[in-house]
View 1 (cartoon, rainbow, N blue to C red):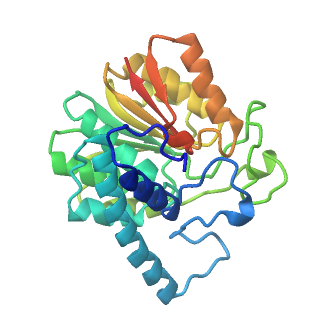
View 2 (view 1 turned 45 degrees about the horizontal axis):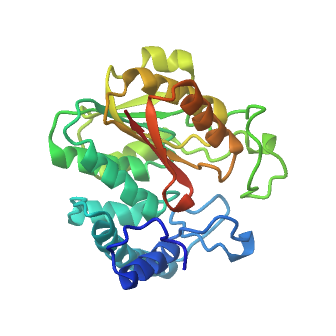
Length: 296
């Protein structure tokens, strides 16, 4: 199996093979997997879908087992302590739209940026499951950071011409047909955050379309970690250009949907890397659905 061909050579093959199996079981799919063979785990039902209580419980039990395995193996592979206590593990069980592999890299990034001054930002929060994971880690650290959360709460914007459709996930037929999809109410985000901490002084919700203009006036001065999940080109480009200016050395950005749904996300990353070659180091772990950019 070549899934872990980039793994450290000192990691025993039996561990690499078990990690590979767990990654696939937890929702990760190798590039080019036919749509008919993809079995994503989705805890948040899509409109029109109904999940029985038994199905939901079976799914949660499975994910609890998968979370424990992937965190243990991930820490062995990378030699890092993700600091995953019971509450953070529970958040990992609840993530939706973010694979466990990607969530593990988010935790790894948070651990690596722990000593770097700056707030955390998430761009495109949807139902708030990943927001709650970030919140759980941030409040555990007690370093006085603020979690900034950006979303229009109106679904996807109109696509840019550079948003070439790569994977017609919901069989809409065109990129333009996705405008307005994946909309979740702000109340869903607030309800999810309240399960972490009922207070409201530790986060900022910035409602509206994410543009260069809105970011200029509505962003923290220093951003040590950012999670980008906006699917499309223009907003991804605008945020990355902001991070060039406001992310200190050692800061990390994790970018979702890298070369998976719209080509626009990968195009935006490529353009910023080309325009600012000394700004970031880029990694696409296991050639999966996300990229990691570390500020140099």
